[in-house]
Image 1 (spheres, rainbow, N blue to C red):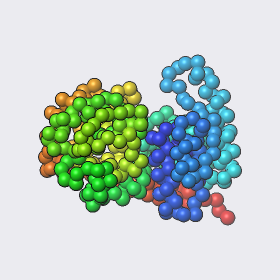
Image 2 (image 1 turned 135 degrees about the vertical axis):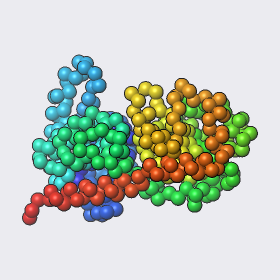
Image 3 (image 1 turned 90 degrees about the horizontal axis):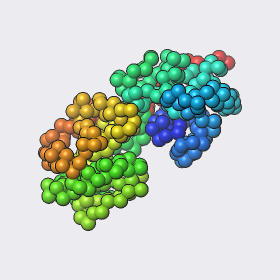
Image 4 (image 1 turned 90 degrees about the vertical axis):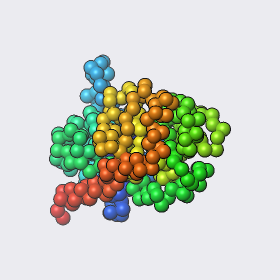
Length: 358
C-alpha cells in the first residue's frame, strides 16, 4: 500500500495517523509513503517509522503565471517516478491525502488501474484532491460540510495519544507535569508549532486580569517567540512535544484553527477560541465552522484578538464551570476520535475487493 500526503504537517500527520491505524488492524500490511524533498516529508515520515520514497514536487500554481507552462512537463516526470515506486513495491492501493505528492501518485495509480482512495482534511479541498476525486468513488472527508465529489465524512485520523485521552482522569498529573496548580481553571494558549504573534501578545497583555480572576495559563509561544512572565501561575514554554498533556491540563484554549487542531480539540472535548490565520483564503475559518456552530468554540478574527477581548469575552467563560462543561460536551459531540480506524477499515475492504485472483 502506498500513502501519498506530503509537504506540510497538515497533509503528513493525517497520512501517518492513518498508516498507524492500518497497521493496528493489519500488522502485516506493507506501507510505503511518497514524499518530496520540499517541506517536512524527510523529517516527519521517517520519524514515524515508514519507508519514504521521493518524487519530484509539482506545486500547482494558484494563478495563471509563467510557472503554469512548466507544470505539464514537471507533472509527467513526477507521475513517471511515482509509477516506478508503485511497481517496485507492488502497490495494491494508493491513498492520497493531498499536497504535492497526491496528484502524481493518483495519476500513476490510475494508469495502472489501481484503486485510489482520497482523504480531505480541510473544509475547502485542495487542488490535488479536487482533481483526484474525479478518478475514484472512494473519497473520504473530515466533515459533511466538505464539498467533494463522492465524499463520505469520517473525520480526520488522529494519534492514539489524542484519541485515547481521558482529560479528566489525566488532568491532575498533566498539571503537575507543567507545574500548574491542580485546582482552578487553566487556559491553554498556543499558536501552533511556529507560534503566533497576535495570540502571544493578546494573552501576555491579559496576564494580570487572568491572574486576578484565578485563571492559570499554559502558554506555548513557539520556538521563535518569547513572552516574559514572572508569575508561577503563568507557565511559558517554547514548545510541547506531547500535546495531549497540554490538552489534559487545560479547560479552554486560544489557538489557530488548522484542520488537525480543530479535530484534536473536538476529539478530546476541549473548548476553544479559534483565531483563524488571516491570510489563508478563509480556510481556517471554515475548519472551525462545525464546532463553532455546535457551541463548542468561539471564533475571533486575528485583528480583534486583544487583551480587552480576552477579559470581556473569555473570563466570564473561564470562571463559569457549568459553561465550560457545556462547551466541552458540545465540542466533543463534533469529534471523530475513531476516524483513523474507520478509514483504515474502508481501505482494507477496498484493497480486498481489488486483490488480483491467484
